[in-house]
Length: 172
Image (cartoon, rainbow, N blue to C red; front, top):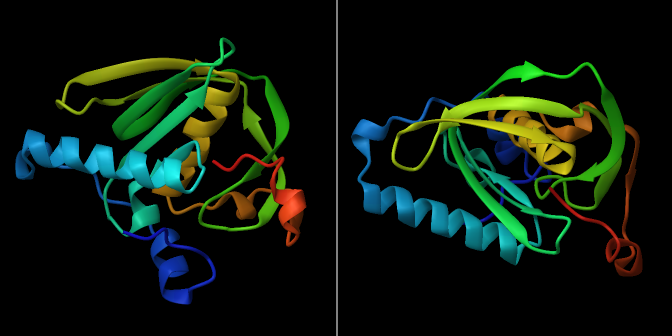
């Protein structure tokens, strides 16, 4: 499985399409576990902190994320059929990148706090209150599932081509 990018017109068209709801009745628990494991491996290999199913060519509402915490650990999430059900009024602007838009970085305004509803890998309903980087990553990934790319929202968008400039950038 390769990451779909905007560098390929067919792949970009797929990335800009809203994904279908994940149907737990058609997939075994092992297949779900294998899918999450594979997505996590791809995300880590590509040095990302979030990955949506459509970024690897799958038409389903699923994302994985592995968010760095203040104590230098990482918290892993896999969320099926996510929806934002509550938001804060406060926003912040931070620089983002994306595995599907390699080399592009820009400033994106996002909500500081959100409450997300969805399902875990067992099909059980979950609710996650997220803030800061976690809220930002969740919003970025849900945008993907809705066919929206960060480059559609970014200001001061630029492309980095020198390897030395890339070393300091994190990619969602």
